[in-house]
Image (tube, rainbow, N blue to C red; front, side, top):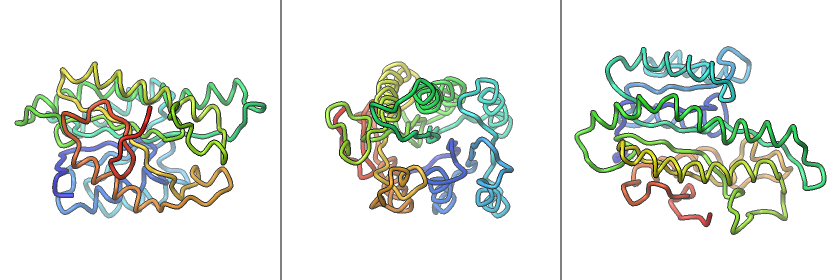
Length: 259
């Protein structure tokens, strides 16, 4: 992971699953970030105990309260991160927080569609807006003119399940609200790549694979990938992202996926 050299990184949904895995591996890097901000809804809750334990051992890990569907919470989180960073910017924002509501075409509801879209699509939009000034500052402070995750980047955790062309794994799970939210997140990523390129910010959507997490196992099938393998692959991909990759949809091995 020698190619990824960031001063600061923020991960949403960092208390478990893929988010927690990313935090762990960032801390284990030979040249770890000076600041790793781990954001989650309830930092003092039972589901954040492992994250709290990590923070007690790593002075560069800061746990940030963040509810991605609450604009007030998002602004408060941005303020806390800004206080820690002082005069420097945020290099890497990983919008990982997400939810899934198992459903079919027959059972999908207004409530499911609204809740899942609010978390999986609107959340990354609002979080990116709030942290944009810090991302801009990181880009402006970089000595490189090329886009990269070491300079400034927004990485949206998407899913192959949101591919309109493939409608991946339909035979296993329909999850209409989840698929729609991830298809919309892919469009958001493309829009961000066009809008933020001028500010020196790289934007990409990543599919982590089908991973052994609570969410990944919610359909009743055991996923083939462990969190460690998925996260290691994704961080390797982040190392290699450059100008040509902004606005792309890639999997955990760096393979381009169909929209």
